[in-house]
Image (cartoon, rainbow, N blue to C red; front, top):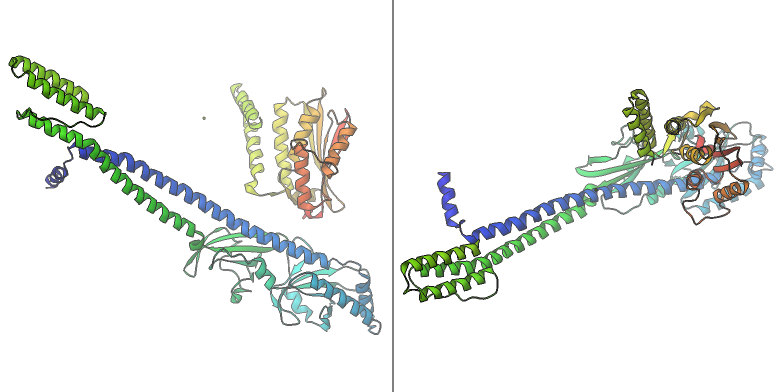
Length: 584
C-alpha cells in the first residue's frame, strides 16, 4: 500500500524529469550548506555570547569589590589617628574625671570629626568610645550600650578592623560601623575609634543598571545578608549560601538568574551579582530571531533560484525533446530557435543541422540513411553526456630511550607538579609552601637538564611564613635569571641559595647565586629601573625582574619590591620584600 502511494507521488511530481532532478540538486547544494552554516554559526556565536555575559558579570562584581574596598580603605585612613594630641588629652582627662578642662578638647575633637565627615560622602559619624559606653563623636558627647555594639562586631580576619551588620545609629540612621582599637600609652583600657557608614553607600556602589530584574547584594562570610535591595532580606542568611557563593544559574521567584560572586579579603564580604537570565540573554533571543529570519529568507531565495535555474536549463532541453519527438514522427519540417552559445544551444544547432541533412538524404539509400542517423545520434549522445617544555620533553624522551625509567619517571613527576603548581587552579595568590615546592621542582628539572653544573639550597628560617599567601610565580623568574645569567655563563660549578625569613613585619626572600656577578654600573642601572628613577624603552630589558617588582608594588605598595646586589665574578643577591599585608 505504502509502496504504491510513494510510486504515485513520485509519478505525480515527475521525479524522473530533468527539471525535477535539477530542482532537487540545486536545493540540496544550496540548502544543506546553508542550514549547516546557520546551525554552526548560531552555536558558536551563542557560546561566545554566553562567555561574554559571564565575563561581564564577573567584571561587574570585581568592579563593585574594588570600589567598595577603595571606600573602606579611605575610611580606615581617617581612623588611623595614632597619638592625636587632642584625643590623648581628652582620654587622659576623661579617665581622671576632670571634665572642667575637657571642653576645649571636646570642641576641637568634634570640629575635627565634623570636618572629616564632610570629606567622604556617606560617612555619617566618627566617634571615640570608652569601655563604659561614653562616646564623643561628630554628634556630640553621649553614652551608648557598648555591649550591644560588641555583640554585633565581626572581623575580616585580615586586619585589626571590625564591622557591624546594618543597625540604627544615634540619630536613627541605618548604618554599618567600621571599628578599630585606638592605641595610646595613656589609656587604662581599650579605647575604640569608629566610623558609621550610611547603608545607602552600598546601594550607590552596587547601582549598575544592567536590567530591571537584575541586582547586587552583599553578604558576610557566613552568608548573612548585609545589603540587599529588598530591605526585609537584610540580616537573614542568604538562600544561595552553601560554604560560599558559587557561580551558577539559579531559580528564584520563578525567575532564572545568573549568580556571579567574588569575595573581598579586606572586608570579609561576598559581593554577589544576580543577573536576570532573560535580560542578559535578550541579545541571544534577538540573535535567534535574526538567524531564523535570515535563514528562512535565504531558503526562499535559494528555492526561487533553484526553480528559475532549473527552468532556464530544462526548458531548452524540453523543446529539443519535443522537436526530436516530432522529427521521430516523420515531421522533418521542425526547427529549433537557437539563442545563446552554451552547450544546449550548440545541441540545438546540431539538431537543426541534422534535420537539414536528413532532408537532403531522403533520396539516398536506406542503409546510408540508417548509418547517417546512427552517426548523428551518436554525435548527439556525445554532446549530451598545521624552549622549556620542548627541552624537558626531549630530555625525558632521551631518558626513556636509554632505559632510565626511574629517572624519566622523576622528571615527569617534577614536570607535572611544576605545571600543576604554576596553574594553581587559576588562583593568583598561593601559599608560600606551594611557591617553594614550585621552585624546587623547577630547580630539579633545570639541574638535571644542565648536567648538575650547580647545587641549590632552600633555607626557610621562619617556618611560620610557609602558611602565608603571596602572588604566585614570584621566585621562579628570579631563579631562572640566576641560572641563565649567573651560573651557566661561568666556568665553575655554582651554588644557588634561596632564603626566606620574617623581619620588621615584612616577608623577605633572598636568591643568591655564586655565578659571574654583575658589574657595579649595571647593578645601579637595574636598581634605578626597578625604583622608577629611570625608564627604559626596551620592554624586554630586565623583563623578569621588572615583572615581579611591578606586581609586588601594585599589590603591596612602594615598600615592597626587588633590590639587586652583586660582586662582579663572585655572586649576586636579589632581595624580594613583601610588606606586612603580604604576611597575612
